[in-house]
Amino acid sequence: MHAPMHAHVVGAGLAGLSAALRLAERGYAVQLYEAAPQAGGRCRSYFDKRLGVTLDNGNHLVLSGNRATYEYLAAIGAGDQLVGPEDANFPFYDLERGQGFTLTVNRGRLPWWLLRAATRIPGTRAPDYLRAYRLRRAGAEASVADCLPERDSLWRGFFQPLTVAALNTQPHEASARLLWRILAETFLKGGAACKPRIAKQSLAATFVEPALAKIATLGARVRFGARLRRIDCGQTAAERLFFDREVVSLGPSDLVILALPPWNLAGLLPLSDPGLEPRPIVNAHFCLPGDAPLPPEQPILGLLGGTAEWVFARGPVVSLTVSAAESLDAVSQGKLAARLWQDTARALGLSERGSNQSAMPKIRIVREKRATFAATPDAEARRPGPLTRWSNLRLAGDWTDTGLPATIEGAIRSGVKAASAKGACRTASA
Ligand SMILES: Cc1cc2nc3c(=O)[nH]c(=O)nc-3n(C[C@H](O)[C@H](O)[C@H](O)COP(=O)(O)OP(=O)(O)OC[C@H]3O[C@@H](n4cnc5c(N)ncnc54)[C@H](O)[C@@H]3O)c2cc1C
Image (spheres, rainbow, N blue to C red):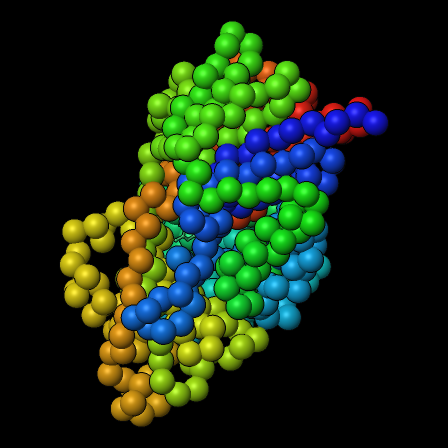
């Protein structure tokens, strides 16, 4: 019998949880360290005293084609914790034109949905959608706007909102190649791969708590309030980890995975800074009196022509998202609340439902200034893989070279990749 090999995973966001899970499954003795008092990182939930309900830090949408996400959820026993419509339906409300429509992608790979005006975006023709293939041929330097210069209904109702939602970056600076990867893994595989999905109860109940429970059953230990302050590295290997109240000396076969955001790595390691720029996301949460404003089987509504791009409804809680929200930095909370409430009331027809729903209820605005990195062509060229020049030290996180923008799917894949990168994949008994 060999003693188990040790793995130290720093950062309990989805990348760290995914790495910890894969290593624990392979028989490593895993220790997970997290600076915050809770796990989940940028994908977390908390009890909000003002609204009296549990909120997510922000709306998180995944698509049914996000295979690593589904594998992760199956592995932690939370495969049934995502909800959404039976088919790939995306209802939208156009605030500028006062018109609703539903984009409906049929299940198979052949895009029959393009042949029916009722399932397309109003004002578009089937051949317009072939423009998506320009993204496949895009050069490494090309932005989405470079490849798709037409400013027509397809741009306004599909390419522009998809870019902002998936890449959290405005199309004039967003990487065309990254948008192509999203399309290729989801919409271009047909409706079965692009059904919209959200967490049933909360992000914590879907992605975080079951993962902590699962890794605990595999013997992993988790330390909260453990901020990594420094790493001592020799020529070829990391030697010591310095936390606030603890120094961990690394044995010859110990593995370290740093699953931290890029801006938290600076100063910990003598690595060249990838210099990724952050981009904000703003979310606003309202608790509405009366009936749930959207049906439970269709809890998501896209918005065009307003401030926010998405409305999610979970029971009485309505949450709006504004991605790539840098233009809102200077807007006061009061003004922002009024704008977002106006969008909500119009999109959900609240004034028509009676006066008890038309007055602005209490609101919680969450501004995540560093929600994701800016998914530009320049950033794409600078994202590192999991390996470092230290043989026992790996990187994970949505910002590493996953081939995807900063998403749940990218974060989970990065954890799997770091856990199985060459040199880190021996089993405990190997
Ligand atoms: C508001 C918002 C909306 C989003 N919407 C979507 C969406 O709709 N769909 C989607 O797929 N993705 C979405 N994302 C992106 C998604 O949440 C992230 O890509 C993913 O959660 C990143 O996970 P991560 O593990 O790479 O990083 P993080 O979640 O940032 O995890 C890093 C962890 O490391 C910890 N840490 C930092 N420094 C230290 C240290 N020195 N020592 C110890 N611990 C440390 C942090 O506390 C954190 O818990 C959204 C993000 C935000 C913020």
